[in-house]
Image (cartoon, rainbow, N blue to C red; front, side, top):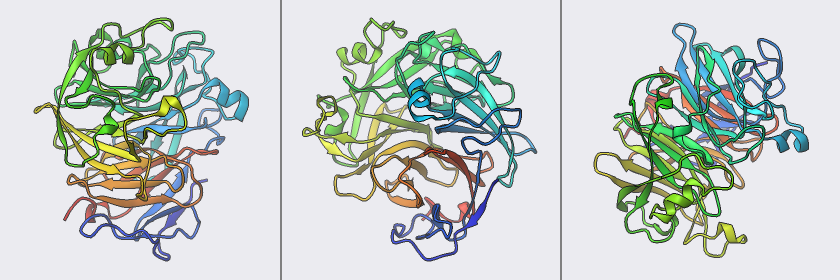
Length: 431
């Protein structure tokens, strides 16, 4: 059953930066979610709850998109980052297979679609895509569908490592969008011209940021199957990996290199190795991406372990706890807006969305406390929420189309979804 909790207790010790944010967080009397004063949350759609048409809510809630459902409220299309080992070893709840929406009968991941009222109450939830793997993040298309990303390069009954399209009204299309590449996808966003920007969270070697120029830009549902050109980003002046850039405010020119084989088989050269061999910049844990209101593309590098990393495959040029970049498609430059240093409170930025209220909002997946953090266009950071109950990560933060509700997941066992409401228009990135 959903619960509504208001923030009306003692202030949490982490204040907002002067002139930004919504004030200090206050301790949640239920011990779950610390929020600024005046905000409240509702919990729903936990792992193991009964779905509206039978079956159980799957585990590992991750990336999420929000879409208008007219006067009914909002549709949420939600990823479930699950693989076979999660089910066999950890006993997590898989995504049930749905006829007509199923890609690979041997796979256990997918998406669910939720209908939520304008007041943040769950109306219904059901499976919308099944038979995929490790559905991590994704992104909303300009034509209001969800692209769910597989963060894997595994083969079960079929090859995985693709992106699939889910219509919030009609359900998922089980055909992989091969032209968007086969690799360990994290997230995808779209520029105003219809080009797509994709992140890759991979290791040995690290992943890349990609640009996809579609043959049929902005042509609506199913149009990405028509193909296009996949390229990888190269940051001029970076000779190692992206962690070598340490000064916020640094602006670098970027260029793009072609990926010859976008759909490699298991025994062929992965896309990132093809791209890095041509000069693309490797990035340790390329995570969230979202388009800002000004048309810039926000990009996240979650953290870098530095030259003294314990595992050889995690060694990076320099150490940081997370970077937030903003790429300008018109000027072909990228700026380092935020960097969390080794001695900062926050670490592990991951999923990212852009608020209609003047700031970006980042989910953290750190080692200790996990947060929702606001990032102003000028690079100031303020806390919006803290997981007060566990060290589980936030994932899939997204605002409702009317901007009045923030939806977000906590991925732990059991995973659940939150609807947060409050005076969003009164603060945030405004000065």
